[in-house]
Image (tube, rainbow, N blue to C red; front, top):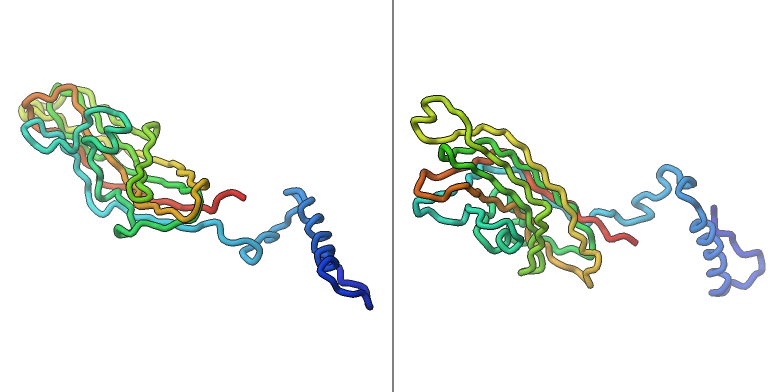
Length: 236
């Protein structure tokens, strides 16, 4: 489908050049998807659709603690609201913090597909106290704006169980769970007026209990996982 050259002796003008190319443009725009062959649109025709990405594996085990005996409250789930997740008592998991060594990523208007997987391996709590472990991803952008969607939230419920005598004597409830959790979400920044900054993608977590009295602390352990994102150019 070449551009037709002018006839011999014709005067080449701006209008004649535009006419040649407009004829070809009309033909191409009229093609249906089924008419496009393999390699019809390669990197020589279009820019790459990926404008940024990041990934890391969990470097070390993460521990969540609910300590009713005067310990820090930063691991406790007081409420399950957006405000509580972002600015409340939920703990930010260092191993699930992706921030490009603190520099973030400068991106054009685009869509950011993020993904997190975490494996909850063990919960130790007080006998007779039901426990829940909560996980929720957040995105920080443009130095001060936090994106969070509580529909992404996941929780793991540990009811009271019948235990061996050794566990009963210790008053603890060990619960080996090996429970994988996966998060996939999309941040749509195609409406940004220009370049913007993806500061960080993080996973926040906490523990809630049916009793907060003066009993031994509850702990949960996450020992496998990873966090990452891919940013795509906005739709045409």
